[in-house]
Image (cartoon, rainbow, N blue to C red):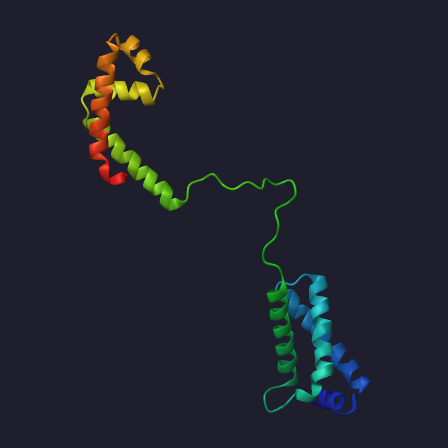
Length: 177
């Protein structure tokens, strides 16, 4: 094979190149397929490899390795170059949603969870009558008047309990502001 390369390099011998092509094109294509290239790409890279052999045959040196090693090194480098040029990012299909995720980032989710645990802990320490008005206001969404009617309490008492609960919660969670 080294002799064929030398004939291509020195004389531009088409017959020698034809022999190289017959010997190596199927092997290079098979190598490309094993590397994950599809059939068309493998065929293209095989031809490109042998075209490079034709153009650069004069650079081959038997001292650095066999002709086969040199040819497959060219093939490997061309495959790497092709992979670098390929687009890694693919657009979403036309019918796919293009909305940003509404999910919290992991650190924000953890922070919210910790904040929720702290609020529940503070709520557990409130007197039952204050817990009741805060729960009715924030969980059930009732207004102060509706809470007063449901608990059969004066509106001022509901507001007073709510204000005391807010103050205790605010003081306990001061560092979260």
